[in-house]
Image (cartoon, rainbow, N blue to C red; front, side, top):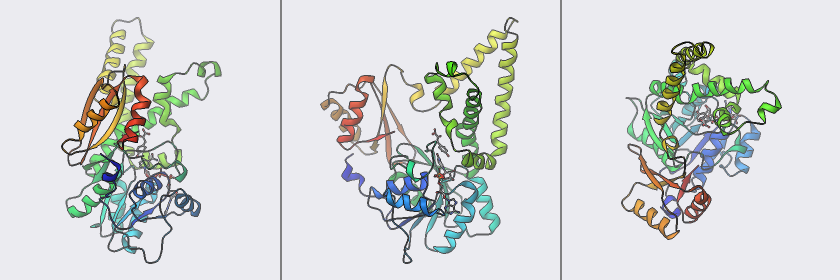
Length: 365
Ligand SMILES: NC(=O)C1=CN([C@@H]2O[C@H](COP(=O)(O)OP(=O)(O)OC[C@H]3O[C@@H](n4cnc5c(N)ncnc54)[C@H](O)[C@@H]3O)[C@@H](O)[C@H]2O)C=CC1
Ligand SMILES: O=C(O)C(=O)Cc1ccc(O)cc1
């Protein structure tokens, strides 16, 4: 896949972004790479100005007629902003990127708004730090982007939002709002709280103990740096589902604590062993790096789902004298992008990323 081929965006016309923080400015930066006309706005003048100055888009003009509006404000504000945008731009499709989908939809329904031009969505891509300063054009590369279909929605409206996801290198996944919220409760919202709860134990640790911290504790506490103001909104909007997963987690925890407290009683060691094996089974089911051979480093390359692309990638790696130690290919139904995960020896990782990027391949972060 060459850069030139990537220069044809699926979304054409003006895209208006409301909320130019991390997500909004990242969408803007990604679309600007294709030359799409992007307008950025924000309730904070500074955030909007920064987004413009970082190249995420331009300031709005009275004559703007956007085809697509991306609402990237905190979850509590989504329904109100979507309703206002639908009313202000009667020809535009409006999407939002909030981390919860059922609550904003229910709020919009309660407002009595005509929702035939509203398609909720959620890119599973983010960072611990918000704001336009943290935005990145490549934030969405290779990541799933849930697009919430509803039976009454026109196919063209859903396709436009899927086109946005594809333009930004993401993989659209259609799901309804309830299935989305249940899924992210398990893979995003509960992990956030578990990471947070563990990191809280570190707050009162001695410097000597913290000085011994290695990769393990860093892996499980990375997302504990997330913004509390945003996360309290996300967790409130998905509270019941997250609570039910945490109850099951608490049951497991009680069992392990009981076994540790009575470690010399018969069965205690078995309980701990079975808990650890259950964890092995769970993590092995995660797609991506977890199931891979840890002797190798992996590079995720996005390839157009067209004949010959994979052959060209392999040939170019050969020309670059880079040996493929292992290989895995992932497809998402309906997406026109394939994800090739190539394993190389760790010493070759930096050169592989650099050389492939130089030749125009897109590498997911
Ligand atoms: N941070 C993350 O990793 C991810 C966040 N999301 C979702 O994206 C949305 C935005 O999150 P971030 O970009 O991280 O937050 P952010 O704090 O970086 O940006 C939000 C922006 O919205 C603006 N804003 C607030 N109320 C507004 C209103 N009524 N009208 C116009 N602008 C308004 C704020 O001034 C701010 O600049 C949230 O709904 C969040 O759930 C989705 C995926 C990942
Ligand atoms: O950094 C990570 O691993 C994340 O999972 C970031 C993230 C945060 C919130 C979302 O709604 C989606 C993704």
